Amino acid sequence: MDKVRDAAFEEPTIADDDRHCKQSVKPLIGIPSGWNEQSQAYHLEARYVDAIAFAGGIPVLLPFDTRESTLCELCSRLDGFMFAGGRDLSPLLYGEELLPETREPSEKRDAAELALARAALETDKPLLMICRGMQLLNVCLEGTLFQDLPTQHSRTLVHWRVENEPDPMHQIEIAKDTPLAFLLGKTQIEVNSRHHQAIRTLAPSLRVMATSEDDLIEAVYMADKPFVWGVQWHPELLYRDDEPSAALFRAFVDACG
Ligand code: MN
Image (cartoon, rainbow, N blue to C red; front, side):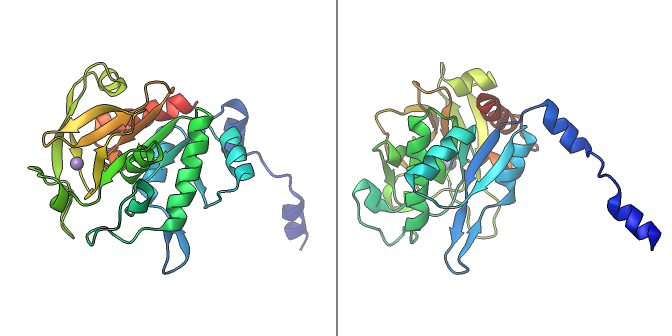
């Protein structure tokens, strides 16, 4: 009995993690969650979270909240934002009707992410926009998308995997004198591909950073922002074995630090 009471009153020891916390400051990176309508549950693949932690950031998963006051708080307290892949954006956002090939969009997620992206851009927060994230950035800045590559683009490469097949890989050409070319020190890399949509008309404030052989935009950036990059591929699925993908996450987290 006494032993139990002693244990209960024992001073808690400071965990190594807590000590570490007092000595260094890791950037807090907000990641908007996806949404599963059927189960009414927030949803995000763990690889996105793992990649940020791997690169030295602390991932913070975000629910939907479009209130001005919340967006303002998030932009002042968090150090950067990463937007993940996911469902097709509503084409109504760029003035088109839904094609039969376009997957039913999530209006909730579209609205929440667009509001957060705008707030983050206004406050010059570093942004890493992956796949749907890059498409959202383009639409947010008044660009448009191919709703469905197989029916709208005369492509020569496979950008979309068939169910249960591994992601196709294809080469991209990185434009010289862009931040990605400087970061990697090369102008060609192999990337994975799991998109059936892509940028059609580039937003005026974005610049092309990489293209595929069949002329799709595979990476963009904003020249007048400290770090606003979009990539069409999925570095979160590659970074463990692929140096360019690892370098991309490190560069982003460094920019947030
Ligand atoms: Mn591709």
